[in-house]
Amino acid sequence: MSATKSGSISEEPKANGCGVCNNEVDGKEKAMQCDLCNRWVHTACCSMPDDLYKTLVKHEKKHTGVKWFCKVCEIHFGKVKLEIKIVEERQVVVEVKQVALEGDLMEIKREVGALKQELKEFVKVKQQMEEVESVEMKGKYDELKTELSEIKKSYSDTVQSGNVVGDLVRNSTTMPNREIKVEVSELMEREKRKNNLVIFGIEETNDEFATKDKVNEIVRAVGLEENKIKYFGRVGRLVAGAKPRIVRVVCEDNETKRKFLKESNRLKTMDGFANKYVAMDLTKAQQLQDKNLREKLKEIRERDKDARINNGEIVIFENSSRKVLYSCVH
Image (cartoon, rainbow, N blue to C red; front, top):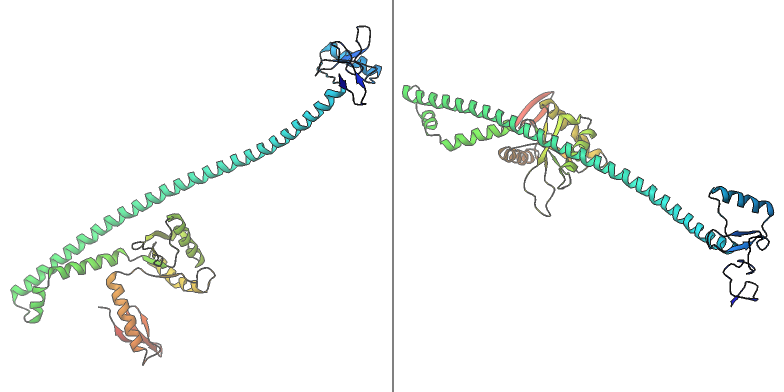
């Protein structure tokens, strides 16, 4: 036995009974079979208009796919349809996100490809620069070697001819080979750095491209063309907790180097660049010379406050004339 919605008691559903009244449904009565539970229902029991009944029977014979559900199945199927709709809406959201993710993935692949190509070109340019420098340095070395041979021959001829005597002859004939090598090495190193500059204050990072971008930002800030100043690399060994290593750059020519040095004085007045400054790429000998020159300047400024360093000399300008107070230029 089962309870109906009204609370009355009815018999167990019959095999061929109406889904509402449970009475037998014979072939003479107007009834519809539910396409979901397959039970028959009198049209009178489900209050189905006669014209609707005829239309449904007509479509059923033509197999048009029109379905009819009893009230019980319609309630349950309505819930299912609602859940299907929610699932479909969620599926649409997921598909939209997937399309966006695929787009992001394609963009990332494109950027990675571009970075790989840029790295490849960077390595190629660096190799070319090293090859050019190697050829140039070999040429300079051969020239200096030839000049040294000529100087030695000249010293030898002078001693043998006896035209020069005393300290001059003794100094020329006893000059140690090591001093000559050091002098030649210093000249070669200065020649190698003639178009170089160094930049202080660029944050330390293992990302070469990030450092290169910082260099380009500084170049743009002072109004110069990026392609005329190339990032070369960090100088020195990385030490934990120490100040950022200086960055070496190579200028296209001496004029570009001069402009960069001059315009970089404005960095201290610009937002984001106050702790960055540009200087000459000095050899160790030049650094020592520069240190001595600055110490000498402090001493001289005690009596001449207008003294300044100019081209390796300490000078003052009086009445549009340049007066040298101290010089370390040989």
